[in-house]
Image (cartoon, rainbow, N blue to C red):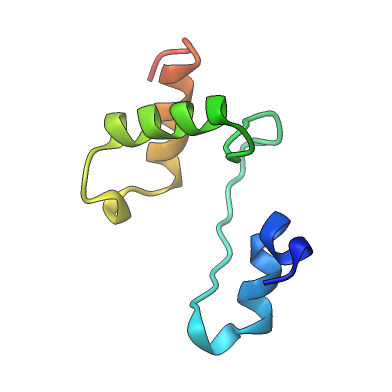
Amino acid sequence: MTPTEREHVTENFYKHANGARIVNVEHTEPLGDMQLSVDSAEDMLCFEALLDILGAPYWRHGLADVVAAKRFLDGGGA
């Protein structure tokens, strides 16, 4: 992987499309202010807390579940 591919991981998926399944997720509510990326150790702790709320198996959760869990973590309730 190039440094750019490490920073922008989706680029690698598109370059090697046979090895990954790419789908678009549509959502009507604007979520541009919801921070879900992992760019720091603090972000990783938040991501781990999000996974704790969702519970395994993680693949069974949809976007609405992730949004509700993130709002709960941010103090906005479920």
